[in-house]
Image (cartoon, rainbow, N blue to C red; front, side, top):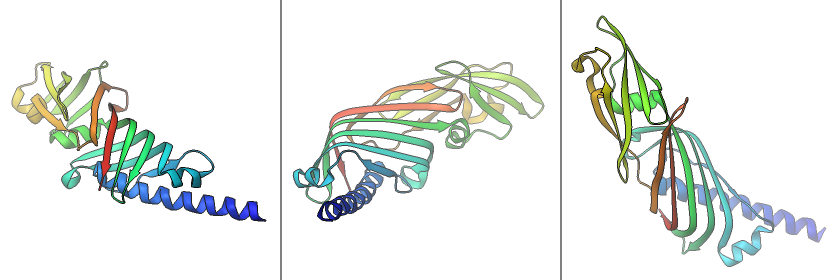
Length: 209
């Protein structure tokens, strides 16, 4: 019976801590909702006593991020190795890795791309824009490049015979990535069949509300 009570207390404390971490991560990443947080390892109470958690997994889907929710994120996964709690509003993480997917529809929305243009994959760093607008029916090609710590540029490299004014913002526009925790930077961007995949990582990072 005592063992069962201890296990129950351990799980209850674990669930409460996961909820509190979810709130802190939501604030730190400027997400529209709470992510799902799982603290790995048993027993939990020994980690709590040390205020250090070996591995924390974070999962979220269909979120918007940044002021005004300017970027839609279809899925987000992150792993935090060595999370150390400081006070009530901050934590440091020994190693932080994350991956996020932004769909082609979300990219088009973020860039204000005209209706009648559909984006799809055309290689690891290229997007095909299928144009069916104002009497023009053709395919254009855009290059995707990281141009700053928190900015990605999408620029037409082959117009496919479509005038620039028909393509609107697609000719050349930037997508701003919502703020990342201190110490975390974008490591890779790639175009997949689903959209833009962004991976980020950092060491000795800081999470704060």
